Image 1 (cartoon, rainbow, N blue to C red):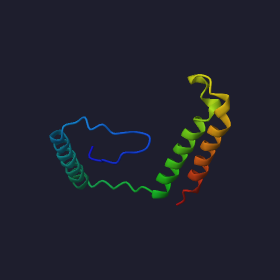
Image 2: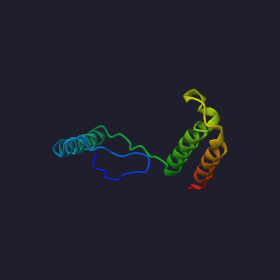
Image 3: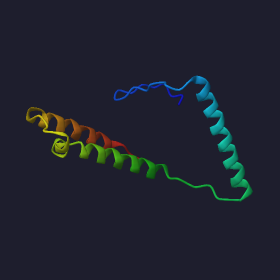
Image 4: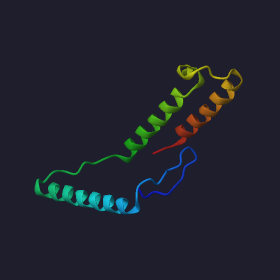
Length: 104
């Protein structure tokens, strides 16, 4: 809600009043404090997450999205321009290769 980074593929519209954002952040903080309190009260274990597994999962999701975006898979959205097929698929292959270079 407070991230102001604009990315190349989307623009975030700030359509929530800043007072509501502040209110929501306070409520989230209250909820987190309550969750920590309940964890202590009921003596539950903290979940341990592997950063390697998170990275691997994200890499897999990126690869799937790129693979499913290949020109031959977009037929349900209409005919892909034949002149652009090779260049478009090569661009996706480049992105997939970059994704493969992400390591842990």
